[in-house]
Amino acid sequence: MADARAASPVIETASGRILSTLNWLRAGVLGANDGIVSTAAIIFGVAGASANHATIMLAGIAAIAAGALSMAAGEYVSVSTQRDIEKAELAREKRDLEEDPERELNVLARLFEQRGVERALAKDVARQMTAKDALSVHARAELGIDPDAVTNPWAAASASFVAFTIGGLVPILAMLLSPQPIEIWVAGVAVVLAMAMTGVISARLGHFPVVPSVIRNVGGGLLAMAVTYGVGKFAGTQL
Image (cartoon, rainbow, N blue to C red; front, side, top):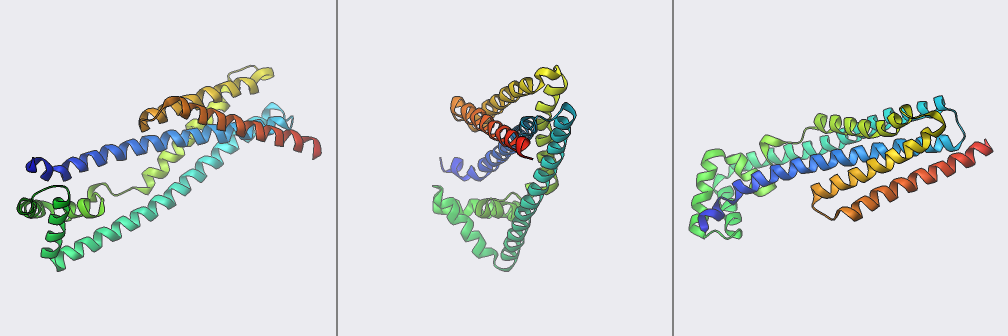
């Protein structure tokens, strides 16, 4: 039992990587959902002002470009800040290991003890793991940071850009592939189906009930489209 507990940092590292992957997938789904709702809301707002087909399409394309770039820039800044913090923490941990390795060894052993490992075994496990890769072991156990998987701001920004663009293309393609007299209604149906799908995927990835997730997604999207349509209708008659 103690040996299994001693191996828990390795298991936790693997679990952490799986969780990180799921978080990236969930972020991608949510980014796509943002693209769907934002683009559809703008399209419906412009359509509410009785704009023609070309104007509505131009507004939708501009919404995708602006939204995707904004999402990418925001994600880049956010993840860059997180990366700087992680690198600073790793540098501090490396310095502590160089200046006072015995103290750091005791800290790691105590962490293993808190997980249920006997004191003598905890010290032995800490010593063996430190000898293999001190910084990696201490960073994961003490800081929850994997030195080999420090966050990448460019990857995050690219993922956000692509996810938002894919989501935004849903109402645009629906309008392009449908007869102009009913294009806005076809786009509305496509958006509702897409939001329901992202709700299902989010629920599956997060292991929570599907129905509430779908209701939140669809309800929020319909509300956004209805409000922007009303705003466009009002503005179109007043300007």
